[in-house]
Image 1 (cartoon, rainbow, N blue to C red):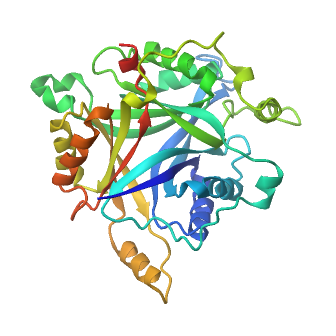
Image 2 (image 1 turned 120 degrees about the vertical axis):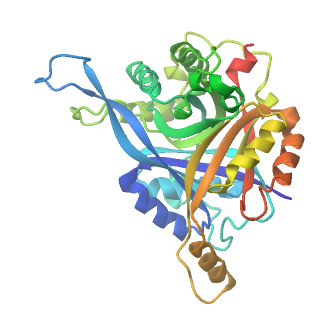
Image 3 (image 1 turned 90 degrees about the horizontal axis):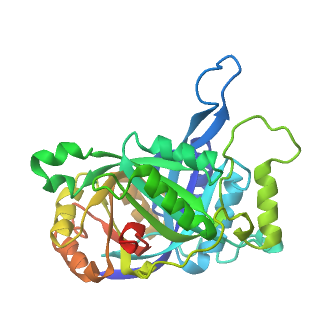
Length: 383
């Protein structure tokens, strides 16, 4: 097995911007780009001719979650180019962030090294553009339960939630007839928040989702570096020269961090259990091959998994070199992928790697790889 330390970059953008992002990814020489359909959620005032009901309506904008990997030294340059291609610094466009990950697999053909640029664009250097530390908080809830939590987060001004969908695996399969008590369809709600607000948001989500009860869902948090964060929580018509989101972004730059807008009164001490006691263990493989591999991981000690479906985008074939032959082969293969996310104790890492390798993750027909990174499990840390 080969191991590769990379930066995993995630871009969440309106579907109308996807073509721009894909074109820029091609120009950057990225050979493997994964996309997943989701939605960004915001509030809009109820029209005056509809006087009854909640004051604000929950509005959904179809969005794509685009993920790819680059060498860590190319992280800033890659994010700056994507942000410029889709104008992600404008409110409401989307979010762009990076996190550390280790890839495990038989072979990797993720990028064309000659076409990657390690230096960020001149405009980014001139403006001293740097990613800011954020916490990516994700909640896995039964389908239909994410709307209430999303509304609460928006009404409190905590951020713009992103919602995607998946299927639960693991605990539900072990319950026999009692499995009907735990819905299989899941909503995965993502939120980027400043580190100073992370504890507050986690506590709020645990209470709102009743996540301490078995079968109600899961919550985790991952440290990320964000270059652009969608802060447009209200879709009402613009009434001033600058939007409130633009004012907040400018103050963040002037103050040098997001600490000034912390919601909680004071930072609380972290739980004794640290961030490194658990890992985010993600399997990516060909569609239809995940079930047996996940079963092997569960037998090796994993508690449960959430399966979602991705699409692998192949680059445009080019003629005349070996890269063209590789691109042609990728273009002719299936682009449907399955992604299974597990949060497991770090001490199980070796056992799980051996189990999924023995189950055929890295061989035909799965042709998969592992993605491993740090994650903090607030429910486990707090007991």
